[in-house]
Image 1 (spheres, helix red, strand yellow):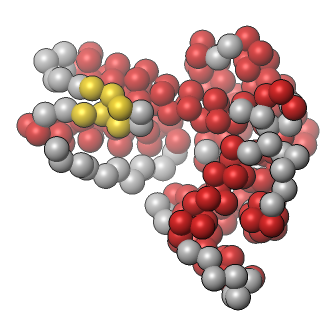
Image 2 (cartoon, one colour; image 1 turned 180 degrees about the vertical axis):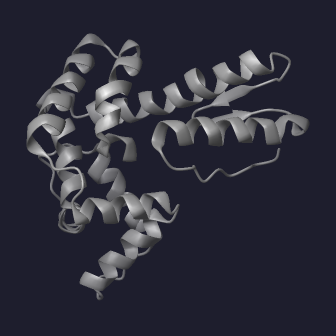
Length: 197
């Protein structure tokens, strides 16, 4: 989600990603660009910096939990509850406002405003999830896999959502490409986890 808060994403990546969208999503993305970047939202507020720092650290849920407990020490939330709140913020209709969504909005008002704006159309509350899925698939398939296929056509690769599976002898190379490509696109290195089968 952090690329959504970069002006450069809306300036350039929108055109790269556009092929992946249905026409109605594509026009939504264009209107988001003009509204967010040109007029409505200042990208650089303190709460947004706090959100991005937390996401970049790879400890987002823990950071969010710490902020909640600082403001509401008696709520007794844990990491799993924080995860549920984030799913509500990202994927539920804007008209649904739980206490948990209010907490997120209070801690990260700028991030909440942008997420809500992307989901503002009644019949298209899933625009944000579609956009995030398209960013993910663009990064994995168009950036990482395409580069691997060009540089090492003998390297076996299989994608599973946001992951790439390969053989053990190719692990370090695939990991290197993923870190390099994702860092170029997002601006910070990802926290990758290796799972052996």
